[in-house]
Image (cartoon, rainbow, N blue to C red; front, side, top):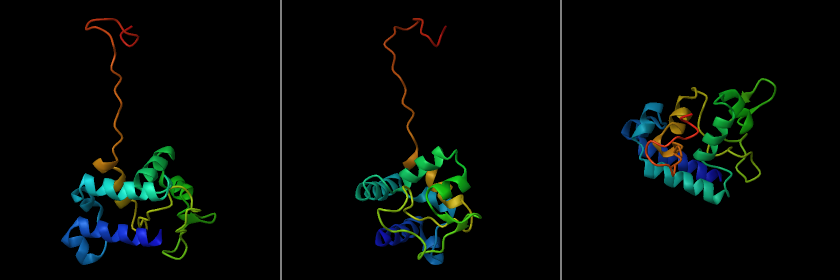
Length: 147
């Protein structure tokens, strides 16, 4: 999975545009320029090959389960260590096997802050569709919601 992580990082930089390619990393505001199709393709490959353990969508679900609290999320996916929640050193201190915590991969640098990973989670590719219940009531009928 380390090779897949390296490829994912390189693809994000490539897809984010010339400025990202020039500096070698993606700025959070460039995430919106990456297509839904490209993000969904990358994510579906992660999810498929990890049997549902890794991927941006997996990470986003865990982040939501952690009440969108970064310290709790980073601890949950094992990106920090020790009592003081020190960020692991990249790449040596990360686990690139299926034995890693759910959501551990792909890696996104959070040393400069959480703006990049938050922009990824808020990208349209990872929006959760609200399922609307379609009622079988006629127009003007009373429902439990209208009472």
